[in-house]
Image (cartoon, rainbow, N blue to C red):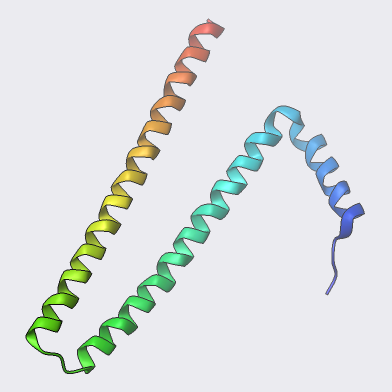
Length: 113
């Protein structure tokens, strides 16, 4: 295995600066960060699905009375509702950000004209 080290990292950063320029480099960094964030969330979602499936199998295998089953069903429903609310909140934030970016782009276009 080889490691890049500090000199190699500095060389890569200088090369990126020369290739992309100082104006595009922050945008490129943001894009890479967003991609890594999305990948991390997707991976977390996959492992979460597997954990939920294992939990469901355990619950189905264990004999429970009606009250315990109702409590488990209620917990699952509450969990689904919380996840849905969180998903909707994230989608709303994304929509707001996109709208702001569109407005900024329009303003920049108008200034350019």
